[in-house]
Length: 187
Image (tube, rainbow, N blue to C red; front, side, top):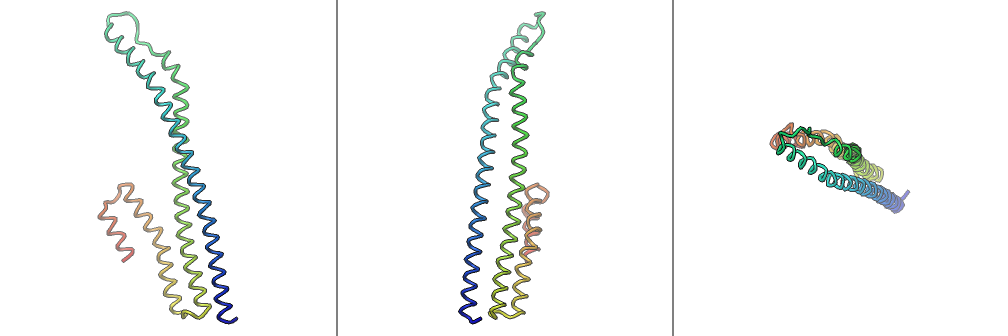
């Protein structure tokens, strides 16, 4: 195979990789926006229910003030009718809150999976470039090994850096500790 054929083959493979990446990005954007739309819809439902229940809470407050003002009255403080009317909304609100928690947890999980896949895809692309360069005698075996080690280190550090970022987000470590840990890994 001459140099022209090798170059043509390499360009064709790069084009196919670009097409595959574009398809992956399109699918990712669709699923992300669909999930965000569902979350937004649930949050709107929650807000509407909470607004509706404010009237019931106000009624309970009015009745309590009347009860306190007429403390010598023989009537007991009773809001069971208001609470009974609120119960379907309270049940629906609990259902929405549970669904929101699950959706947000799934969204975080999917985002982490996308990040991991992106890190792996970056590694695979870089390795494929190095493999082609080695096959085409553009780089030596020694250069290949050195550059592959650098690419592998980035992939390996991804997981460690992600954990350090999570520690910062959870308040386990301070910003200074975060910077020190990152510098130790990358330095």
